[in-house]
Amino acid sequence: MDMQSNVEKREHWSKKREYILASAGNVVGLGNVWRFPYLCYKNGGGAFLLPYLFFAVLCGMPLFLLETVIGQYTQEGTITCWTKLYPLAQGNEIISLYSRVYSIVLAWALLYLVYCFRDPLPWATCNNSWNTDRCVDITSANQTAVHSGNATIDWTLGNLTKSSVSEFWERQVLSISAGIEEPGAVKWEVLLCLLACWVACYFSIWKGVRSAGKVVYFTAVFPYVMLAILLVRGLTLPGAWEGVVYYLYPDPSRLAELQVWMDACAQVLFSYGVSSGSLITLGSYNRKHNNCYKDSLWLCALNSTTSFVAGFTVFSALGFMAYKQGIPINMVVESGPGLAFIAFPQAAAMMPVPQLWAACFFLMLILLGIDSVFTGLETITSSVIDMFPGQMRRPWRREVFLIVFCLVCFIIQISLTTQGGVYLFQLIDHYAANGACILFVGLLQCGAVGWGFGAERMCDVVEDMTGHRPSVFFKLCWRYFTPLISVVCFVGFFLDYQPLTYNEGYMYPNWAYHLGWVMALSSVVVAPIWAVSKICLSKVPSTGLPRPVLATEDETPFDFLALSRQDPHQISCVQPAVPLAEDPVQPLICISDHKHCPLLE
Image (cartoon, rainbow, N blue to C red):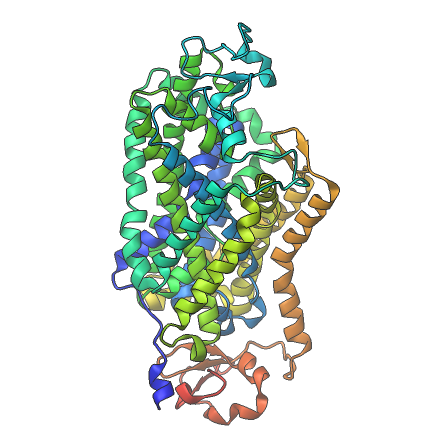
């Protein structure tokens, strides 16, 4: 009796707004600020919004709603939830593990934030120990002056010069080596910042939703305050509107290119946070009758709107940079880390009170990223706890597991703080958690729910929980539209594949490409292997008929066939079928004392 009394119950959000804020913080992340604006500019400006909205409506929103409903309905994490829906679909946790790599981005942002309190900003001048003779001082009156005697080289000569911001990023923050085959020494400043980020993530969720629900009041709201401040400041700068026009000017001819559609698909999947398990986890902490249907639609709209508005903030700053330097705006636009750690710091250095604007920007980046990181951490933790509730839902078991897992992740990521760490980071980012992997997992989920569990039954579930039946559009998406688009885009990613390069110059060695494909394969192969093994090792032959559903006293569904496969000799704890449903093909079987049933432990 004492052992049973020590087992803690699964938690719920204390207030609905905690779930809304946590979900908003999870889906609104770094990609909204540094990736969407660049892709919009790169792929036809305003014309890019057409493929983006196409994938958002037909893939992003249906998958977002589906995963949220799965979590709320089953009240389980991303692995055990499938035992109650369609057991063959288990094994989709690998992407969450690879996504922990993005904590290194928080470490870089934190290091920049520390440097923001220096006067002058260290990346604004060439009078530092890490600068070379090719350095260009961005704060000097003569923007083309090079610190090599009296030499003056025009910006248009490209790699003959390096801005002070680029040298700060490459030579001071990264101390970047010649390639991934030369890892070099550990950057201790970055290592300490990485440790600080992991400590912050640990204490954000160490008590589960009790602590995370309080943290998100700050981490989810404050970035919007910072974004609004930077937006207003950016739009009032000279040259800002030229940047905005460059951001949105439509080029419809780009829509004929496959790359544009692949970029739009990948951006929607990344920014909506689907197929990583985080949406299932956050939804599982909701009360059973929360209106997750309405919540999901509003959160999707918030995510896309934030991406669009962030583009005005970024490109107004880039337009200001082009104006100050007297160069075309396409010469100051960079992608990914280059946009966050080179372009915007350079723009901040040209503004009055540069320390203030730089600090606002990097604080916003940190808060945008930390929500996504600790939500992914909670996804893994909750999955382990739900798999072993009898052992893990006891005092201090969660805290001990979490600190061990964080420590292991930190030790593994030490390799990312070396001089060659940025090459490894880009390799993992490009292969292990890319759009094709996320598409494959989304395809499996749609197949499992749309055809295995049943799209019509899922609509019944939504109606039972929320009182509102979802549009027939979502049923069609779960069964037809989203799987079909996922297959086409999955093939498209391979047709559009290009070997990874760094800064469009460095080519990775062959062994690195092989490692990348191994990581990509590991992200998608676990689920099929699990399904095949379940079928092959099954002791109960498949009849091809719909499976009966096992219902507990609180009407929580269980897959009877999956449970009987675990130990067919222990079905004695299950009562004979009682007429709880009119459908004779889908009988509901009631468990009298399911809390003590060994099949359900």
